[in-house]
Image (cartoon, rainbow, N blue to C red; front, side, top):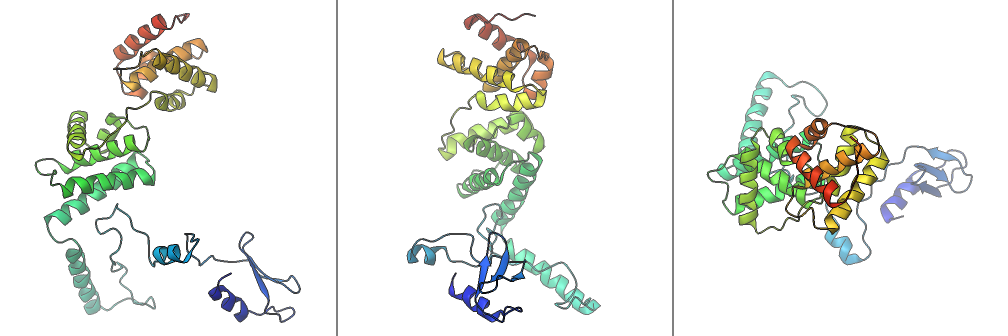
Length: 310
């Protein structure tokens, strides 16, 4: 217990015995009298920091006030905002003259935060990234990574001549690849209202100019997604993963699209476990053509000597 908490505990008095020796139980969320065991309060808020420090140097570096930094806002979340509620501190409605004055202050405050074409571009693009991430249900770390990638693009002045939506889609897709979150290029392009062709072109452009290494996607990462979409059992999932593992050891997956290989392995697993799904159903969820699944299916059953009853 630090000094501030000790002072607060001393300020409180047990109503049962009058003792000031109180215990703050953070696990139970209670304040208990040490002498008689009387529960003084069942509402306890942890006002301490969310970080831990093991020495004085770490404590000085990590001490801060306000919200943490975030790359998803153009000013990193450090600026202030004038509230849109036209009321004073006591909740009373403002008079018409005061309301007009606050409206002008709010307008100029907003304009002063976004000054210049670069700032406006960054503010709009980061809001687009947030919208796309929300549509795709992406975790926070992917959105932060995509925001950092887009900031690098702006810093290197690579955005000129390219649409904001296209570069935003490419940033989201690259962030998904780096964070090992499975989203296909078709899904990202659809969420950002761009075409797959434009998204792929911008993605390759970012790979060339940002000097970023993105590892190839493991087909196993797609299997869980396809199994969930098709409502297949755990036996089918483990069987599909085993098929992909053996195929990768035999170098059958090199040069092949990971989504197509995973879709073909899922199709084979559904046949072997007698939970039959059509190639069209799997192709729709995998965003590949039925021809691709058919070709990968023929390669796998021939090379791995799998017998399937059709």
